[in-house]
Length: 288
Image 1: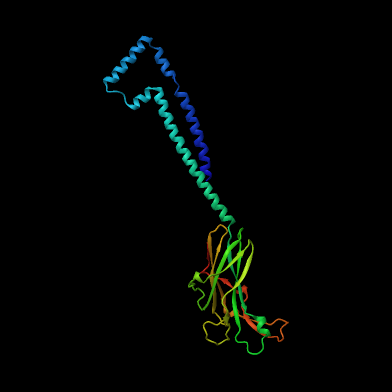
Image 2: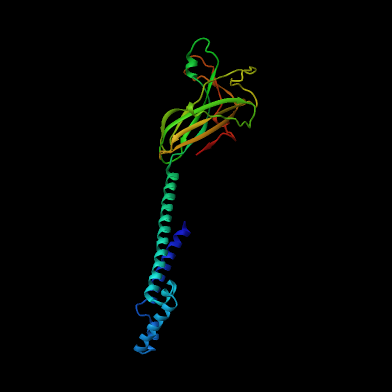
């Protein structure tokens, strides 16, 4: 862009110098014609002109180029036409460069000012732990819910935010199979610049060591919980953006959650995995 800006003034200087040169060489009475006319008396000049005209008629007339180089007015008109063409081409080039610079500046403004949503892992939390602590009798299996933190790192509010959160278990730490169905997305939230919100996925039943249910969350070495999905939003310029995320938890880090001191009975009320044990998976993370 800097090179284009430097070349435009240089073209202007060349055009001005070219125009001044034309004004000097295309006068009404050029010096070379004065010297040639002074060398002959008026009578001889007229006779020479008539003889030249007769010779041109005998030869079938002069060409456009011959007319141009022998007639000062024709020469001036030719050079002026050439100069006008160069000036017109320079004007078109200048207009095109200005349009390109304006478009590039608009894109830079959008890039710097738009909303950017990132999705961070927020751990796997015990579900409804206070309610479980207050319920009498058999409360059923523990339940946990994976959570995410959606943050806006841009300079404009992110609007029309909707999302979907999926999960599954697998023993492969390099799994690359995370399909996303955008029709499941729900929500219509707004996050201001530097703001965030916490959202949870589908509730998961917690199993005990030795159970075999593939959909249960249980403490087991090299059994991984994958939490993935997509966040769709308006970036502030009415452009739809997408942030895809995928977090991995090792189930060996599953821990017990104690009831708080206000519960009538102290004891374990759930299972959780702290966010510090989460990892951004090598696949499934992307944004536009």
